[in-house]
Amino acid sequence: MRRGLPISELMIFERDRSRMPALVALMEKVDQGDDASRTRGASLSAPPPVAQYYDVFLSFSSHNANAADAFKRELAVIDPTATVFDFRLSIQKGKSYQDDIDRAIESCRKVVSILSPAYFASPECQEELNIARLRNKRAGFGLLIPLYWKSVSPSLPLWLQTLNQCVCVEERLDQLSLAARDVHTTL
Image (cartoon, rainbow, N blue to C red; front, top):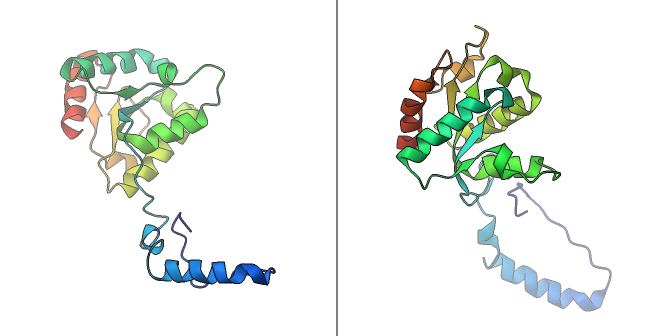
């Protein structure tokens, strides 16, 4: 119920009659609004907000680590306090990483995906992009910022083409400072 599932009727069965007065009192309290306000109006399409942990979740293929490092350096010049999730530094070795990735995407202010053929060849990057796509949609768009690092085939999904983007094709390190500035202005 706390997740906001719509419930039209709830039936509680208690076999021990001696517990019934306590249950009746509790249900009367809920009916008066003590606990009901916590879940009223919630829905699966708009999950409760998660505390912000990162300013930027950086999604990239290991093949483009140089671009990720350069982007982080440029962002640090603009704002030394900006926090960036980089899987190489933010996940403990030997630990299951998926929960950390999910939590970071749920809690960041922006997702920057460094797009390249290597990015689209990586199942992990694809998963991050899909999670970010869903969060972007739920956030009313503006959360996911594609950074085009290397030319990608013309079959780039239309939904991705419609997003505001940073263009650094073909591996233009000189353009990353502009990209970092653009991302920072949206934080």
